[in-house]
Amino acid sequence: MTTSPEFRSGALRPSDAEREQALGALRDGAGSGRLSHDTFLGRMEIVLQATSTGELDAAMTGLPTGNPVERLVLRAVGRVSAFGDRLNRAWRTERLPGLSLPQAGAVQLTIGRIPGSGLRLHDASVSRQHAELRHEGGGWVLYDLGSTNGTHVNGRRIAGGVRVRAGDQVRFGNLEFRLASG
Picture 1: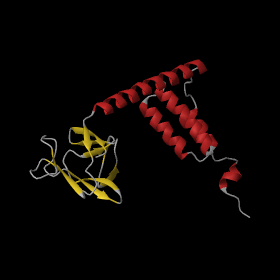
Picture 2 (picture 1 turned 180 degrees about the vertical axis):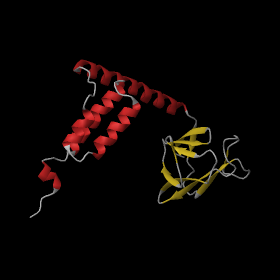
Picture 3 (picture 1 turned 90 degrees about the vertical axis):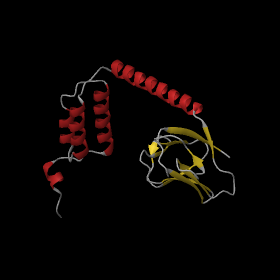
Picture 4 (picture 1 turned 180 degrees about the horizontal axis):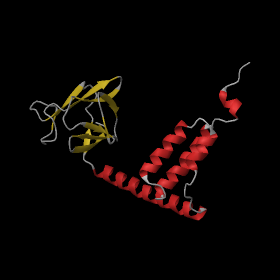
């Protein structure tokens, strides 16, 4: 019976938990300013490709560590600033103009600057034939029609079709709306 080279050399492969712990320490180091962005990326690469716990330990060698109180304070500050960001997004979402989804029985709605669009938007950032809303499978699917400035759903640019529902944020070029049930 042959043994793998790892067992002959006495090296142990790092577990996923050990890798996660090392990545967490690197994130904390970068987040607190103790590691530069380049150093963080380099060490992260080493951790992800480590084939032994020795390589993992080498990636962590010399990592400046803060005391437990400092780490606790940094985590608390991160959570508070993330809360402010979430609160800002929620406030902004509620202030968006509503765009009603078409009534039951409608099959599709074209969106763009071109005359004859079901929803004609008069803004230079909106393409002539920007997007199309189609009723498929009991729900609505929003398709980007190759627009220049993109169609976004909940902050992400879409390619092809994405299922949408009331409450979703949609953006055509620079114009943003909150979908409401028709």
